[in-house]
Amino acid sequence: MTRILLVDDHPLFLDGVRAALTGAGDLEVVGEAPDVAEAVARAAELLPDVVLMDLNLPDASGVEATSRILANRPIPARQRRCIARTQSVTRSARPELLIQNTRPRQ
Image 1 (cartoon, rainbow, N blue to C red):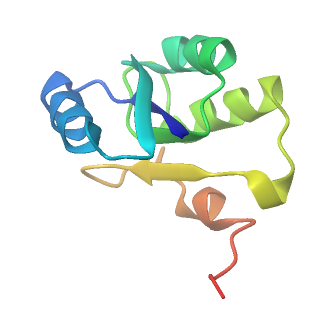
Image 2: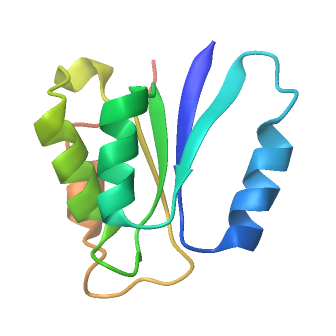
């Protein structure tokens, strides 16, 4: 079972993603967070396998949240799984940080 933490400040989006994932045999939404502070705390508490992260959060960027989560729970590069989403690209969303350490599937 893949455990997923959803991080987004838009309740309607969270409702839709949760509904889409409910019933998917090997996926389980274990928690949600509306901002960076709660995302970091929930990730430390729940230890999800995947974090679906909004890049534009009210208290900081999703990139910052991801950095904090990884700092609290170091994971070998080959095991890192980050899915980032945004409705718009801003200066806080630095794509080069999102694509580092990624390799195409073989």
